[in-house]
Length: 146
Image (cartoon, rainbow, N blue to C red; front, top):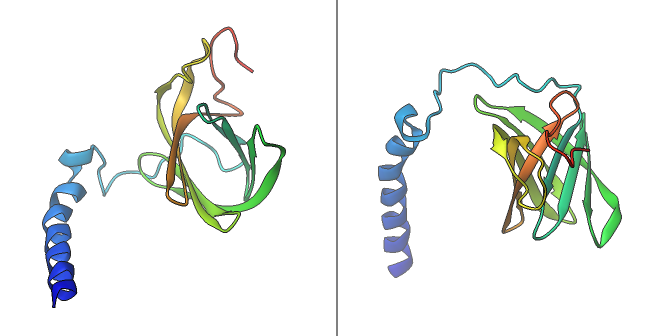
């Protein structure tokens, strides 16, 4: 009985939160808005983070995930999705679900003078990693820019 009551309570809580979470005023996203097109499908997208260091380079439907312990990188197949406030790439890495998101906004890696044009977030299994991103046509600015 306790499990059933818990499920009902959780469902009601989720249902009560949905209208606020889905409204344009709550998150700045207009559900009827235009699909994000600031990054062309043929551009190479790089998402990078520090503490811990990680890097995901996406070229088409192929991604390469690197870390200091895995310099050659692990190749993964990714699927691209353009929402109305950014891009996401989904795939599997070492048996874990990976979702990478790229949204517009100035970003700093906290370790250099570079300023990146995108904010990057990686959800890998149960872990969330924050970082920055850039593309072949929208590179970082600053003294240490690649």
